[in-house]
Length: 420
Image 1 (cartoon, rainbow, N blue to C red):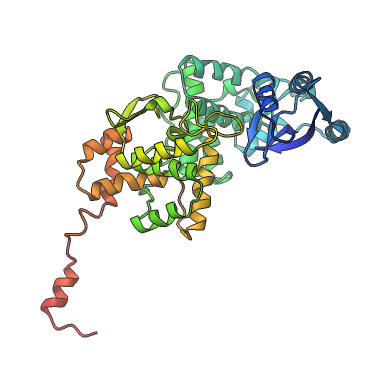
Image 2 (image 1 turned 135 degrees about the vertical axis):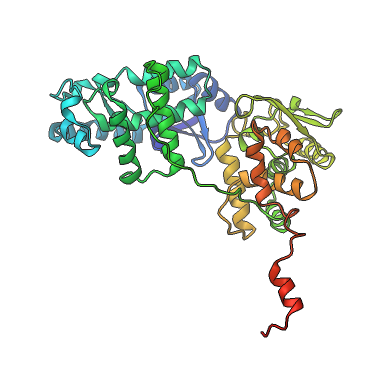
């Protein structure tokens, strides 16, 4: 009988139960489907959150199928309970008035509920302590986001941004804040928390959604200014750097992933979600399903890429069944983080020191198409941009418009007798 070890695990800043055992296809399937475990590529193990419910799921799923070693997990839980008991006896809640001063909220104008700060009035979300007076905020916000069919990534971001505010407010009701309070809070985020312009935009968007979409306060953010975003040009790789990058990879599947990203100008989320049925070899097209903004589109399938994908599939053991690029451990789509790490490793091996990520392959694709004379309107459709203004950024870095421009210094040098 196989032995399975349950160990405490810190994964993505979350307490988890790590499930370790020698690779076994039956246990893999049971752990994933019946216990809801997820595979960690970095930790090389399955994991579930550290909760009673998930622990009992694992225990009953493995009962009779494996010997369970869990002494380290039991010791960790015992020490955690002991430390929590000591911390609870020593910790005093911070005064809401102190918190109000931090973000310059006028306490006299903001009703303070439950100023006793009882520990029983706290809930914890993403390691932030939220007082009972604001316990309704996140569930109401999440419900409205789902009803409006926002993407999972947007929901996660908005809830996280709102949580930061609730953690600072303590006992101060979020529903009672005014636009003037929020102005001071955003100034606090910019000056004290050092949020970037993009980070501040994200936080403003999240709070705007809550006050205007959930609480139905029309034009609540009308007088709240937004920081001007810096105009940043896309970062890209030249053709020699791309050659070094691709040649640095030896794994055929990893090569095929990056070839696909550059050949079709795909986002990393689009690469991992590609299915075998999305490759149309008769029409020589790739179907991109519900990409950013829930927008479907077709992109060209390069004949060279088609040959590469066919060779990759034939050599794969086991062969992919649903997704074009499937994880050997989970037999599901690759996590986006794994593909990003594959790119970073290849960049390092190729000796490329530019600070850029896998999205640079998409930028390189668009810029190189412009260099070769492709109409920018076609590039817009291939990339799936909603606005031509987004695509026009590539005009600033394309060499096509620059190579025929002669510097006035060159003319001066040729016409006049300038010494060097």
